[in-house]
Length: 296
Ligand SMILES: Nc1nc2c(ncn2[C@@H]2O[C@H](COP(=O)(O)OP(=O)(O)OP(=O)(O)O)[C@@H](O)[C@H]2O)c(=O)[nH]1
Ligand SMILES: [Mg+2]
Image (cartoon, rainbow, N blue to C red; front, top):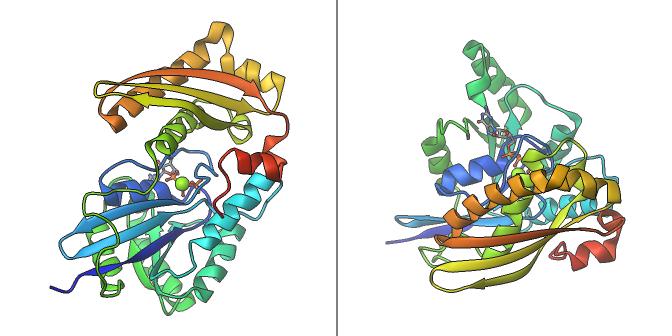
């Protein structure tokens, strides 16, 4: 039997649903998601092996044109690097809005190598389904080389069709990874991401962009994992907001994170979190490197 295997980059502006789609396709949550744009900061490999195909999905940070800080430039760099040596490119857009950032990604998509698939996401939100066909026709003219697939990542609509189109774009090749492997990222990395997700979801608009997580201790035996993590923010005021009245806010974040980490590691988890101020880390090239933003 000839097997197929190759890399599939998932690109798009922030918030179109790239990470939601990855998790859905894998049938397992490895990538964090939230209502806020710029949730994903790192490229994340998600491996799906079924029958004679192994798909190596790369979820990427949303490409954006407003790049005020070093961390934003790192995120865009990461997304761009995913397009190198890729076999299939999935360009995700939201059903109706086509913004300046979408244009920017569209340009990269047009110039990309590999099979091109334009994925129109969130079709569950289309109130008038009769607008879908004319929209697809317009998009096909704008992207003549691309296969068009409308989906709902959240509701799982039309994903089998999408997978078929993806697999048909993969080259014949032996598998690169073990069949039961889901990602190449460490549990330590995934744990830090879960904590960041709970913070993204529970905090107001500005603060999430000023924080980053470092796992200081990760020790486990068969039954229990002991995890210590530091949440870095940029200002004293942010630390106060984050801790909240008598530590309530942080406690809620910790409880939510622990539940997800227990699910991830399949064991009991003792999680301790601290908040520290690291002034200006997000716009400091050296600081972001030392905080793990160093792989592109
Ligand atoms: N209704 C609906 N919501 C969706 C769908 N897909 C994703 N969402 C929501 O859109 C929001 C953004 O989803 P993410 O998966 O975090 O988006 P992303 O493209 O990874 O965003 P960044 O990581 O910031 O680039 C979340 O609130 C999702 O629940 C969909 O098919 N339908
Ligand atoms: Mg994402």
